[in-house]
Length: 386
Ligand SMILES: *Cc1c(COP(=O)(O)O)cnc(C)c1O
Image (tube, rainbow, N blue to C red; front, side, top):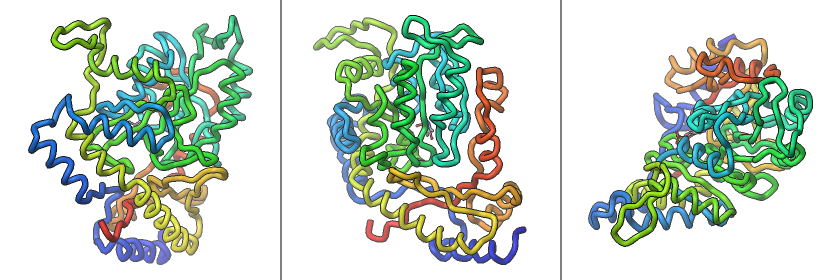
Protein backbone atom coordinates (compact mmCIF):
# COMPACT_ATOMS: atom_id res chain seq x y z
CA UNK A 1 0.00 0.00 0.00
CA UNK A 2 2.82 2.40 0.90
CA UNK A 3 4.81 2.14 -2.32
CA UNK A 4 7.13 4.23 -4.49
CA UNK A 5 4.29 6.65 -5.30
CA UNK A 6 4.36 7.65 -1.65
CA UNK A 7 8.11 8.09 -1.47
CA UNK A 8 7.85 10.37 -4.51
CA UNK A 9 5.19 12.38 -2.70
CA UNK A 10 7.50 12.82 0.28
CA UNK A 11 10.33 13.89 -2.03
CA UNK A 12 8.11 16.42 -3.81
CA UNK A 13 6.86 17.94 -0.54
CA UNK A 14 10.36 18.26 0.94
CA UNK A 15 11.58 19.79 -2.30
CA UNK A 16 8.67 22.22 -2.44
CA UNK A 17 9.40 23.47 1.09
CA UNK A 18 13.20 23.10 0.81
CA UNK A 19 13.14 21.41 4.24
CA UNK A 20 13.84 17.88 5.49
CA UNK A 21 11.28 18.21 8.26
CA UNK A 22 8.10 19.87 7.06
CA UNK A 23 5.74 21.07 9.84
CA UNK A 24 1.95 20.97 9.49
CA UNK A 25 1.47 24.72 9.72
CA UNK A 26 3.73 27.59 10.75
CA UNK A 27 2.92 31.27 11.18
CA UNK A 28 4.47 33.75 8.74
CA UNK A 29 5.47 37.22 9.98
CA UNK A 30 6.81 40.32 8.26
CA UNK A 31 7.97 43.86 8.97
CA UNK A 32 4.56 45.26 9.98
CA UNK A 33 4.19 42.76 12.81
CA UNK A 34 7.63 43.64 14.14
CA UNK A 35 6.97 47.38 13.86
CA UNK A 36 3.56 47.30 15.56
CA UNK A 37 4.67 45.03 18.40
CA UNK A 38 7.81 47.14 18.92
CA UNK A 39 5.60 50.23 19.06
CA UNK A 40 3.59 48.65 21.93
CA UNK A 41 6.76 47.93 23.87
CA UNK A 42 8.28 51.36 23.25
CA UNK A 43 5.11 53.20 24.30
CA UNK A 44 4.29 50.84 27.17
CA UNK A 45 0.79 50.11 25.83
CA UNK A 46 1.03 46.32 25.97
CA UNK A 47 -1.99 45.29 27.97
CA UNK A 48 -5.66 46.06 28.41
CA UNK A 49 -5.66 49.58 26.97
CA UNK A 50 -4.29 50.76 23.62
CA UNK A 51 -5.18 51.67 20.08
CA UNK A 52 -4.28 48.38 18.38
CA UNK A 53 -7.31 46.56 19.81
CA UNK A 54 -9.55 49.20 18.23
CA UNK A 55 -7.65 49.09 14.97
CA UNK A 56 -7.75 45.30 14.86
CA UNK A 57 -11.49 45.20 15.53
CA UNK A 58 -12.22 47.77 12.82
CA UNK A 59 -10.01 46.11 10.19
CA UNK A 60 -11.46 42.68 10.95
CA UNK A 61 -15.10 43.87 10.82
CA UNK A 62 -14.40 45.54 7.48
CA UNK A 63 -12.78 42.43 6.03
CA UNK A 64 -15.62 40.15 7.14
CA UNK A 65 -18.29 42.67 6.13
CA UNK A 66 -20.04 42.97 9.50
CA UNK A 67 -20.75 46.06 11.57
CA UNK A 68 -18.76 44.99 14.62
CA UNK A 69 -15.94 42.78 15.82
CA UNK A 70 -15.04 42.33 19.49
CA UNK A 71 -11.51 41.02 20.09
CA UNK A 72 -11.03 38.51 22.92
CA UNK A 73 -8.36 36.24 24.42
CA UNK A 74 -9.05 33.16 22.30
CA UNK A 75 -11.53 31.53 19.93
CA UNK A 76 -13.11 29.38 22.63
CA UNK A 77 -13.96 32.47 24.70
CA UNK A 78 -15.30 34.14 21.54
CA UNK A 79 -17.63 31.18 20.94
CA UNK A 80 -18.78 31.09 24.55
CA UNK A 81 -19.71 34.78 24.57
CA UNK A 82 -21.15 34.68 21.03
CA UNK A 83 -23.50 31.89 22.13
CA UNK A 84 -24.40 33.69 25.36
CA UNK A 85 -25.27 37.03 23.77
CA UNK A 86 -27.09 35.25 20.94
CA UNK A 87 -29.45 33.77 23.53
CA UNK A 88 -28.24 30.30 24.56
CA UNK A 89 -29.28 29.58 28.15
CA UNK A 90 -28.60 26.96 30.82
CA UNK A 91 -30.07 23.55 29.88
CA UNK A 92 -30.56 24.47 26.23
CA UNK A 93 -29.39 22.01 23.62
CA UNK A 94 -27.07 23.31 20.90
CA UNK A 95 -26.71 21.45 17.60
CA UNK A 96 -23.19 21.04 16.23
CA UNK A 97 -21.23 18.61 14.06
CA UNK A 98 -19.56 15.76 15.93
CA UNK A 99 -16.61 16.33 13.61
CA UNK A 100 -15.19 19.49 15.17
CA UNK A 101 -12.48 20.72 17.51
CA UNK A 102 -13.29 20.28 21.22
CA UNK A 103 -13.73 24.07 21.68
CA UNK A 104 -17.14 24.04 19.96
CA UNK A 105 -18.53 21.60 22.52
CA UNK A 106 -16.66 23.11 25.47
CA UNK A 107 -17.96 26.63 24.78
CA UNK A 108 -21.52 25.28 24.98
CA UNK A 109 -20.74 23.38 28.18
CA UNK A 110 -19.28 26.50 29.85
CA UNK A 111 -22.78 28.02 29.54
CA UNK A 112 -24.31 24.96 31.24
CA UNK A 113 -25.94 24.13 27.92
CA UNK A 114 -25.74 20.71 26.23
CA UNK A 115 -23.99 19.88 22.95
CA UNK A 116 -26.16 17.83 20.56
CA UNK A 117 -24.26 16.11 17.76
CA UNK A 118 -25.43 15.63 14.19
CA UNK A 119 -23.86 14.35 11.00
CA UNK A 120 -21.80 16.07 8.33
CA UNK A 121 -21.75 15.71 4.55
CA UNK A 122 -18.77 14.64 2.48
CA UNK A 123 -19.55 17.58 0.16
CA UNK A 124 -18.31 20.16 2.70
CA UNK A 125 -16.99 18.16 5.74
CA UNK A 126 -19.51 20.29 7.69
CA UNK A 127 -23.13 20.02 8.89
CA UNK A 128 -25.54 18.28 6.49
CA UNK A 129 -28.63 20.53 6.16
CA UNK A 130 -30.86 17.82 4.62
CA UNK A 131 -30.04 15.29 7.28
CA UNK A 132 -30.45 17.95 9.99
CA UNK A 133 -33.91 18.87 8.71
CA UNK A 134 -35.07 15.24 8.65
CA UNK A 135 -33.59 14.59 12.07
CA UNK A 136 -35.16 17.65 13.70
CA UNK A 137 -38.56 16.83 12.23
CA UNK A 138 -38.43 13.41 13.89
CA UNK A 139 -36.82 14.30 17.24
CA UNK A 140 -38.31 17.77 17.75
CA UNK A 141 -41.70 19.32 18.32
CA UNK A 142 -42.54 23.03 17.99
CA UNK A 143 -44.21 24.35 21.13
CA UNK A 144 -44.92 28.09 21.57
CA UNK A 145 -42.34 28.99 18.94
CA UNK A 146 -39.51 26.94 20.46
CA UNK A 147 -38.26 23.54 19.36
CA UNK A 148 -38.50 20.93 22.11
CA UNK A 149 -36.46 17.73 21.99
CA UNK A 150 -39.17 15.10 22.53
CA UNK A 151 -36.68 12.66 24.03
CA UNK A 152 -35.04 14.95 26.61
CA UNK A 153 -37.77 17.57 27.09
CA UNK A 154 -35.18 20.35 26.66
CA UNK A 155 -35.24 23.32 24.30
CA UNK A 156 -33.10 22.99 21.17
CA UNK A 157 -31.97 26.62 20.88
CA UNK A 158 -29.17 27.04 18.39
CA UNK A 159 -27.17 25.53 15.54
CA UNK A 160 -23.39 25.97 15.35
CA UNK A 161 -22.00 25.00 11.95
CA UNK A 162 -18.22 24.86 11.68
CA UNK A 163 -16.33 25.56 8.43
CA UNK A 164 -13.94 22.62 8.54
CA UNK A 165 -10.35 23.49 7.55
CA UNK A 166 -11.74 26.71 6.04
CA UNK A 167 -14.31 25.11 3.69
CA UNK A 168 -17.67 26.88 4.05
CA UNK A 169 -20.76 24.81 4.86
CA UNK A 170 -24.03 25.00 2.87
CA UNK A 171 -25.20 28.18 4.56
CA UNK A 172 -28.34 28.95 2.53
CA UNK A 173 -29.77 25.52 3.28
CA UNK A 174 -28.75 25.67 6.96
CA UNK A 175 -30.31 29.11 7.35
CA UNK A 176 -33.55 27.73 5.91
CA UNK A 177 -33.51 24.89 8.48
CA UNK A 178 -32.86 27.40 11.29
CA UNK A 179 -35.77 29.55 10.14
CA UNK A 180 -38.08 26.55 9.86
CA UNK A 181 -37.41 25.45 13.47
CA UNK A 182 -36.79 28.92 14.98
CA UNK A 183 -33.17 28.16 15.81
CA UNK A 184 -30.39 30.70 16.33
CA UNK A 185 -27.44 30.40 13.94
CA UNK A 186 -23.96 30.96 15.39
CA UNK A 187 -21.03 30.23 13.06
CA UNK A 188 -17.88 28.66 14.43
CA UNK A 189 -15.70 30.42 11.87
CA UNK A 190 -12.51 29.76 13.86
CA UNK A 191 -10.80 28.31 10.79
CA UNK A 192 -12.31 30.33 7.98
CA UNK A 193 -10.88 33.85 7.87
CA UNK A 194 -10.59 34.58 4.14
CA UNK A 195 -13.30 32.03 3.13
CA UNK A 196 -16.43 33.06 1.26
CA UNK A 197 -19.84 31.52 0.60
CA UNK A 198 -21.55 32.87 -2.54
CA UNK A 199 -19.23 35.90 -2.41
CA UNK A 200 -20.00 36.76 1.22
CA UNK A 201 -17.44 36.24 3.97
CA UNK A 202 -18.02 33.44 6.49
CA UNK A 203 -18.75 34.70 10.03
CA UNK A 204 -21.28 37.16 8.58
CA UNK A 205 -24.26 34.77 8.31
CA UNK A 206 -25.12 33.92 11.91
CA UNK A 207 -26.74 36.19 14.49
CA UNK A 208 -23.35 36.30 16.26
CA UNK A 209 -20.21 34.46 15.12
CA UNK A 210 -16.76 33.50 16.37
CA UNK A 211 -13.23 33.36 15.00
CA UNK A 212 -9.84 32.23 16.34
CA UNK A 213 -6.35 33.68 15.94
CA UNK A 214 -4.45 30.90 17.67
CA UNK A 215 -0.88 30.26 16.54
CA UNK A 216 -1.89 27.53 14.09
CA UNK A 217 -4.70 29.46 12.33
CA UNK A 218 -4.36 31.30 8.99
CA UNK A 219 -3.49 34.51 10.84
CA UNK A 220 -2.43 34.67 14.46
CA UNK A 221 -2.36 37.13 17.33
CA UNK A 222 -0.33 34.65 19.40
CA UNK A 223 -3.58 33.69 21.07
CA UNK A 224 -6.86 35.41 20.37
CA UNK A 225 -10.36 35.35 19.01
CA UNK A 226 -13.17 37.62 17.92
CA UNK A 227 -16.94 37.88 18.17
CA UNK A 228 -18.52 39.17 14.93
CA UNK A 229 -22.01 40.51 14.42
CA UNK A 230 -24.16 43.05 12.58
CA UNK A 231 -26.13 43.71 15.74
CA UNK A 232 -24.72 46.79 17.50
CA UNK A 233 -26.55 46.08 20.76
CA UNK A 234 -25.24 42.51 20.93
CA UNK A 235 -21.72 43.71 20.07
CA UNK A 236 -21.88 46.26 22.87
CA UNK A 237 -23.10 43.59 25.25
CA UNK A 238 -20.30 41.23 24.17
CA UNK A 239 -17.75 44.01 24.76
CA UNK A 240 -19.24 44.72 28.18
CA UNK A 241 -19.25 41.05 29.22
CA UNK A 242 -15.69 40.43 28.04
CA UNK A 243 -14.34 43.47 29.93
CA UNK A 244 -15.55 42.39 33.40
CA UNK A 245 -18.96 44.08 32.89
CA UNK A 246 -17.56 47.34 34.21
CA UNK A 247 -19.90 50.30 33.99
CA UNK A 248 -18.07 53.08 32.09
CA UNK A 249 -16.92 55.76 34.53
CA UNK A 250 -13.83 57.96 34.82
CA UNK A 251 -12.68 56.46 38.13
CA UNK A 252 -15.27 54.28 39.85
CA UNK A 253 -15.21 50.47 39.75
CA UNK A 254 -18.81 49.40 39.40
CA UNK A 255 -19.72 46.09 37.71
CA UNK A 256 -23.36 45.37 36.91
CA UNK A 257 -23.13 41.61 36.35
CA UNK A 258 -20.63 38.76 36.58
CA UNK A 259 -18.52 39.38 33.50
CA UNK A 260 -15.33 37.87 32.16
CA UNK A 261 -11.76 39.10 31.77
CA UNK A 262 -11.60 38.03 28.14
CA UNK A 263 -10.22 41.19 26.54
CA UNK A 264 -7.47 40.79 23.94
CA UNK A 265 -4.26 42.53 25.10
CA UNK A 266 -2.97 45.39 22.94
CA UNK A 267 0.29 43.50 22.25
CA UNK A 268 -1.62 40.63 20.64
CA UNK A 269 -3.84 43.01 18.68
CA UNK A 270 -0.71 44.74 17.31
CA UNK A 271 0.53 41.41 15.95
CA UNK A 272 -2.96 40.85 14.51
CA UNK A 273 -2.98 44.24 12.74
CA UNK A 274 0.17 43.22 10.89
CA UNK A 275 -1.21 39.78 10.06
CA UNK A 276 -4.54 41.08 8.73
CA UNK A 277 -2.67 43.06 6.07
CA UNK A 278 -1.52 39.72 4.65
CA UNK A 279 -4.71 37.63 4.63
CA UNK A 280 -5.22 37.81 0.87
CA UNK A 281 -1.60 36.89 0.24
CA UNK A 282 -1.88 33.92 2.60
CA UNK A 283 -5.09 32.70 0.97
CA UNK A 284 -3.60 32.97 -2.53
CA UNK A 285 -0.49 31.06 -1.39
CA UNK A 286 -2.63 28.35 0.17
CA UNK A 287 -4.68 28.03 -2.99
CA UNK A 288 -1.47 27.66 -5.00
CA UNK A 289 -0.42 24.93 -2.59
CA UNK A 290 -3.68 23.15 -3.41
CA UNK A 291 -2.79 23.19 -7.11
CA UNK A 292 0.64 21.77 -6.28
CA UNK A 293 -0.84 18.98 -4.13
CA UNK A 294 -3.56 18.21 -6.66
CA UNK A 295 -0.92 17.63 -9.29
CA UNK A 296 1.23 15.27 -7.21
CA UNK A 297 -1.63 13.46 -5.46
CA UNK A 298 -3.40 12.69 -8.72
CA UNK A 299 -0.56 10.23 -9.39
CA UNK A 300 -1.36 8.20 -6.27
CA UNK A 301 -4.07 5.57 -6.09
CA UNK A 302 -6.49 5.52 -3.19
CA UNK A 303 -6.35 9.20 -2.23
CA UNK A 304 -8.06 12.42 -3.31
CA UNK A 305 -7.35 15.98 -2.33
CA UNK A 306 -10.37 17.66 -0.76
CA UNK A 307 -11.49 20.69 -2.83
CA UNK A 308 -13.64 23.67 -1.93
CA UNK A 309 -17.40 22.99 -2.16
CA UNK A 310 -19.38 24.63 -5.00
CA UNK A 311 -20.48 28.26 -4.46
CA UNK A 312 -17.52 28.82 -2.11
CA UNK A 313 -14.03 30.25 -2.09
CA UNK A 314 -12.04 28.49 0.61
CA UNK A 315 -8.94 29.74 2.42
CA UNK A 316 -7.68 26.10 2.36
CA UNK A 317 -6.38 26.60 5.90
CA UNK A 318 -5.33 22.96 6.23
CA UNK A 319 -4.77 20.84 3.14
CA UNK A 320 -6.84 17.69 3.41
CA UNK A 321 -6.60 14.30 1.77
CA UNK A 322 -9.37 11.74 1.76
CA UNK A 323 -8.34 8.09 1.70
CA UNK A 324 -10.36 5.37 -0.03
CA UNK A 325 -11.79 2.63 2.17
CA UNK A 326 -8.97 0.39 0.94
CA UNK A 327 -6.32 2.54 2.65
CA UNK A 328 -5.24 2.36 6.28
CA UNK A 329 -5.10 5.85 7.80
CA UNK A 330 -2.67 5.06 10.59
CA UNK A 331 -0.28 3.31 8.24
CA UNK A 332 -0.18 6.43 6.03
CA UNK A 333 0.21 8.73 9.07
CA UNK A 334 3.04 6.62 10.48
CA UNK A 335 4.85 6.62 7.16
CA UNK A 336 4.54 10.36 6.45
CA UNK A 337 5.53 11.40 9.99
CA UNK A 338 8.50 9.01 9.96
CA UNK A 339 9.60 10.65 6.73
CA UNK A 340 9.48 14.12 8.31
CA UNK A 341 6.28 15.19 6.54
CA UNK A 342 4.13 16.18 9.48
CA UNK A 343 0.60 14.85 9.04
CA UNK A 344 -2.38 14.58 11.35
CA UNK A 345 -5.73 12.77 11.56
CA UNK A 346 -8.87 14.82 12.13
CA UNK A 347 -10.03 15.40 15.74
CA UNK A 348 -11.56 12.39 17.41
CA UNK A 349 -15.34 12.85 16.93
CA UNK A 350 -17.00 14.50 19.94
CA UNK A 351 -19.56 11.72 20.49
CA UNK A 352 -16.76 9.18 20.98
CA UNK A 353 -15.00 11.15 23.75
CA UNK A 354 -15.84 9.91 27.25
CA UNK A 355 -16.68 13.49 28.33
CA UNK A 356 -19.35 13.87 25.63
CA UNK A 357 -20.47 10.31 24.86
CA UNK A 358 -23.74 10.71 26.77
CA UNK A 359 -24.87 13.83 24.90
CA UNK A 360 -27.87 13.60 22.56
CA UNK A 361 -26.96 12.68 18.97
CA UNK A 362 -28.37 11.71 15.62
CA UNK A 363 -27.07 9.18 13.11
CA UNK A 364 -23.35 9.86 12.59
CA UNK A 365 -22.46 7.49 9.76
CA UNK A 366 -20.60 10.06 7.66
CA UNK A 367 -18.61 11.37 10.65
CA UNK A 368 -17.56 7.81 11.48
CA UNK A 369 -16.47 7.18 7.90
CA UNK A 370 -14.62 10.48 7.42
CA UNK A 371 -12.88 10.09 10.76
CA UNK A 372 -11.07 7.01 9.40
CA UNK A 373 -10.20 8.63 6.07
CA UNK A 374 -9.09 12.25 6.65
CA UNK A 375 -5.44 13.29 6.84
CA UNK A 376 -4.07 16.85 6.98
CA UNK A 377 -0.73 17.43 5.27
CA UNK A 378 1.73 20.36 5.48
CA UNK A 379 -0.15 23.60 4.79
CA UNK A 380 2.13 26.54 5.53
CA UNK A 381 1.65 29.18 2.83
CA UNK A 382 4.87 29.71 0.88
CA UNK A 383 5.35 33.45 0.71
CA UNK A 384 8.33 34.38 -1.41
CA UNK A 385 8.57 38.10 -0.65
CA UNK A 386 7.75 38.73 2.97
C1 LIG B 1 -9.14 26.78 16.84
C2 LIG B 1 -10.58 26.46 16.95
C3 LIG B 1 -11.41 26.98 17.98
C4 LIG B 1 -10.95 27.72 19.17
O1 LIG B 1 -9.92 28.52 19.11
P1 LIG B 1 -8.86 28.82 20.28
O2 LIG B 1 -8.40 30.16 19.88
O3 LIG B 1 -7.81 27.76 20.16
O4 LIG B 1 -9.57 28.81 21.58
C5 LIG B 1 -12.76 26.71 17.94
N1 LIG B 1 -13.30 25.94 17.00
C6 LIG B 1 -12.55 25.40 16.01
C7 LIG B 1 -13.22 24.58 14.99
C8 LIG B 1 -11.18 25.62 15.96
O5 LIG B 1 -10.45 25.05 14.99
